[in-house]
Image 1 (tube, protein in one colour):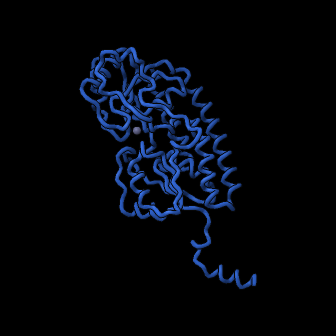
Image 2: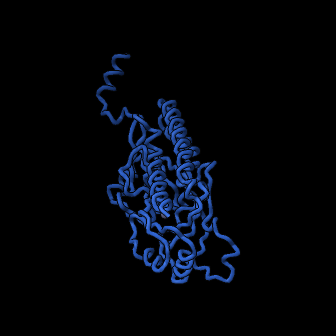
Image 3: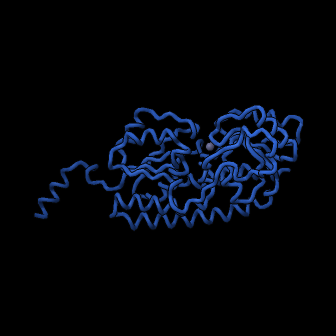
Length: 302
Ligand SMILES: [Zn+2]
């Protein structure tokens, strides 16, 4: 009997035997966390293409059919990647969707969490935001609950490897906690230097590390702001901002024009979503490392 079963199994295509789930991810930091949890067992698929804007991306038809046949989708949530939400509607009933912003224990911020209410009295409020700030991967503390949730979802699909997923998640948590300590130390000398960024993506990072973020020219969904907001940012930049930071997938001109006649310098272009990275298990940490290097590079020169 045993012999018969094993010869039947040996005739099945390899894919019928593989238990490691096929996992879709939306952005490089999420890809990195999933890749760390999967370890040597497998590799997730990253949907966001190199150089693309995370808020406004078009999936190719081949990516849509990839998603439809996947076992698991790990993504930030509809607040960041509505293109992913639309694609998931076409997935089979067996697919498990894990939107990370909904994971218990995630530290969430509302847009405008850093605003001083007094400062806005009588101002044009065209730049005020409502709703959850989607850029929660920029607080490394969110990695811990997310890694646990990823390990749980993968284990539910592939219980035979549950111990490996749990061990990999634990190792990733320890690694990211060590990186967090390193970044605190690296940024401590520049934490009071004011800076302005291209789009309003940095609340999680700057509140966690205690930095002097003074605002952004574009909204949290990367849409452009009105003239009144630009005038306000121009005033902010003239008022002691040390550096302004463009972003990799956006034209720097608008931001740089606002520094005319001020002492502010232009720093390296930031990549808050890691769109220029080659996706790897290190992508979550690399986004934070690269932000740290760019901020420190300009702010420490003052
Ligand atoms: Zn963004």
